[in-house]
Length: 114
Image (cartoon, rainbow, N blue to C red; front, side):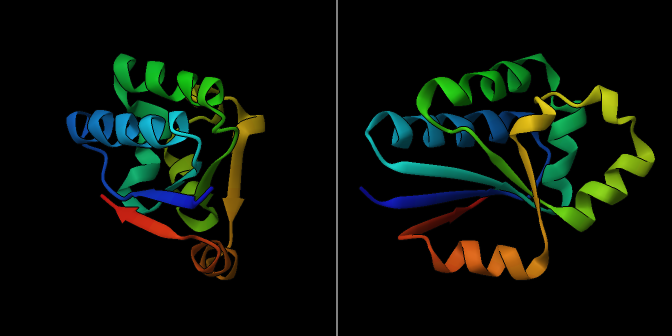
């Protein structure tokens, strides 16, 4: 089993749907799949649209139990949006410091940036 990380850096819903489909496919094939939201990608947690919300809800069904997010980007986004408007269960959200993100990257066999 390989560790595969999908980094979503933009908030364009159409691209995001394709990227989440790719992550779900990797997970369905038995790979240890993770998702990391950076920069504009954190906006998906608050305003990704109904289809993105559906895909995010499917992640645990495929064994993707945590969604990692840059802690600083999440904090900035929380100042703009209410935490109650999150499209993902707060328990599944894992804020990471810059140092923790570097460690996560080192642990991966493959990293896909979108």
